[in-house]
Image (cartoon, rainbow, N blue to C red; front, top):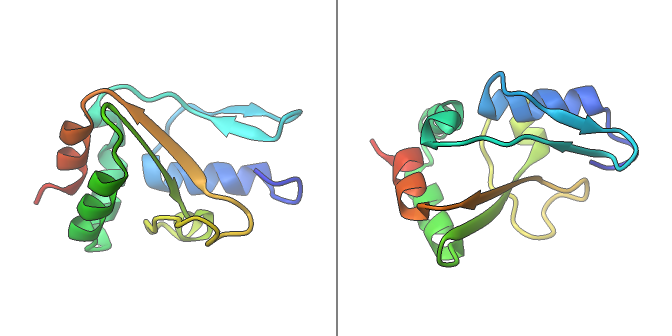
Length: 116
């Protein structure tokens, strides 16, 4: 989160993609975090990906970015605030992305997010 960003708006952007999850706000370090476990925790994101009809694109890009049992990707905050999923390619967003880090069964995670 950038110093000029409203923490409530950033929180709303995150919740638009991940549902009513518990967020921890560290005002001092200007960071908002959440820890989710299991693929069911990203059910809302899965629905947004389906709604935006970007399953194939998401599957291709996430599989390309996977490193063994880890995956890290960014989501555009402005799109998220509007309720849409847009991957943040490096340098796309001067305000920085909603950063998502996944560990474990990455193939299962990507399959769950993008299954039809």
